[in-house]
Image 1 (cartoon, rainbow, N blue to C red):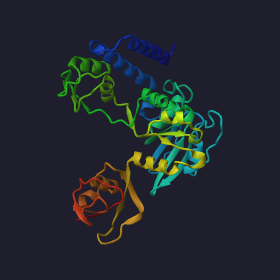
Image 2 (image 1 turned 180 degrees about the vertical axis):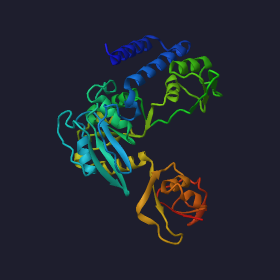
Image 3 (image 1 turned 45 degrees about the vertical axis):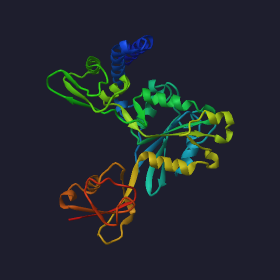
Image 4 (image 1 turned 90 degrees about the vertical axis):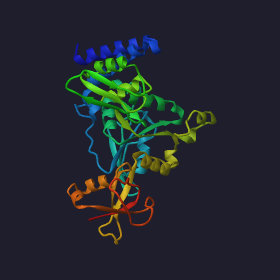
Amino acid sequence: MTKEEIIKMQISRVEKEIRDTPYDKSSEHHHGVLKAKLAKLKDELEGPMNKGGGGGVGYAIKHSGDASVVLVGLPSVGKSTLLNKVTNAESKVGNYDFTTLGVVPGMMEYKGVKIQILDLPGIIEGAAGNKGFGRKVISVIRASDLVVLMTDVQRANWLNVVSRELYNAGIRLNMRPPKILVHKTYKGAIQVIDPYYSFDKETVIDVAEEMGLGNAIIQFGEKIDSIDRLIDGLVKTRKYMPAVEIVTKMDLAKSADLKKIPEKVLKMCVDQELGLEEFKERIWQGLGLVRVYLKKDRTAEADKQEPLIIKNTATLDGVLKRISNQMRDDISKAYIWGKGARFPGQEVSFKFQVFDEMEVYFGR
């Protein structure tokens, strides 16, 4: 029996014990230890996949552009058609499952930003356990910036299935990391600082030890409401990603179908090009990118041909570092223009957060 087969057997046993153990306050500690053991086993099984690819399990993808987006969903929901509509790609289109057996890239330009979109093989139930093209597909997803989950109107409930598969693979969609700080120490065993009283300290310590932590200070920055979130805060292999959910083939929808689709889900008919512009805008919003225009002179026009593309959480200090680390030492002032400035040419600190279409001049 191979090492992989042994780990899979251990995973099955732990999963069965979790299912067979009723969850309540008295069993919370035991559940926590079991889930910690399960997380550790899965990380050991998946190995390099949880690091964004490698280990021979991923597709060889050359990323280009300002960001990368993956189309993920059931076979034959129109991923290839959508890719062909919004990019310069030529992905094979068919009405049968697994038309796309490789990864087909295309480049979408929107608001002056180049966004690489990857059409992946259809993902099916069991992908997290490597069914179908499971691990290869998931390795590409982890290395990307945003996930588009797609299904058609006749299988709308499969959005939950696909989301669950990615969750089981350690990918957290439209979630933020729990505020748990782990500081490893040389001695002192495990110390817990939890002013929010999320769990009893014994549970936290036993979960941490089960996951391989020895000497460490675990500090909670918020109330953690579940064992799963506690484990997410202790492991380093979770991938947090924005996601856009799509239901296609809305031309086939019946009134009963519409009631099953959540309001937040984008409804499209790709063949008729319905919803394409909203799709592009949702991608833009999900990526959280902004365009920053640089001025070479305080009184000159900004260069709008080649904007600096950066995350909307960045500060002007981050902009400077993107331009040149050495330049930061020579600059003492920043002036901004645009909708986020109180007045044109406002002088701001380097801690000022960027906004879309900001114009900025850095000076001494």
